[in-house]
Length: 308
Image (tube, rainbow, N blue to C red):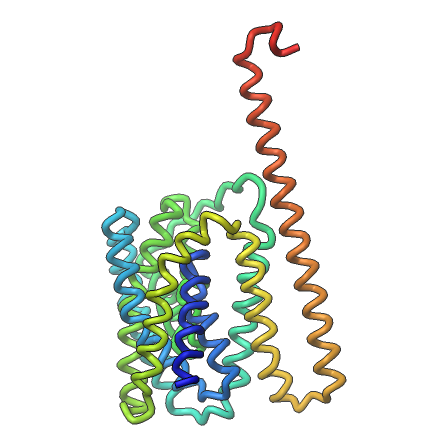
């Protein structure tokens, strides 16, 4: 019972992150589940099975709000599903103790990506480099993102979304909505691959249901949080958590001494706190600049005597 409660809390935290940032459900939940000593294949299978429900709900919402480019979805789901299926079969056929350090390293890289993406997300948006993906370019993009998502327990959004955002032919909301909608097919393909390699006996349905319940509870809370906490600060917090949780597995794989582990964690925490302080300061400075600009703009419409 205690484990089910913990899994529900993990699902809740992961959905809070994903609902607030629009990404990182798989990365966050997989990183936290690996800390409990679970096999990477079982962890990824449980996460993707839970995502079948969460991504379906997300996709329906994006479609209703007109945030989906159907042509992009169609071009992503076939290579993405193939990559996810093969990635699941690959992960399920390798002993957990061998693949676990590599999975953690991949998640650590994704954590670095999340951290730096939100750490430097300030100021006026720069014009994206002009690029339009051809039909052939969607194939390697979908396959790579799907394969990494299945083997690493997450990565579809962090890999596919930035590439689509570099295209000046697509609105950001449609890039995010298309990736989220197509992720349903990726979750289904990954689940089928894990079922073939692991079988139902290795999957604990109670764990999957706990993750789903936690995600359902967190959905409205995330919608409230995204209005209260700046995404840049929240993204920096989450990126640091992902890095530190996966560093534990990597240090264990190299049989690092206690002193090395302590010094590594200390250095990471110091850098993380520095990043949080920098992001917070930039956010406050940016908000102050906006208020000054709004005040100056408003003063233009005042009578000349009132301006003085």
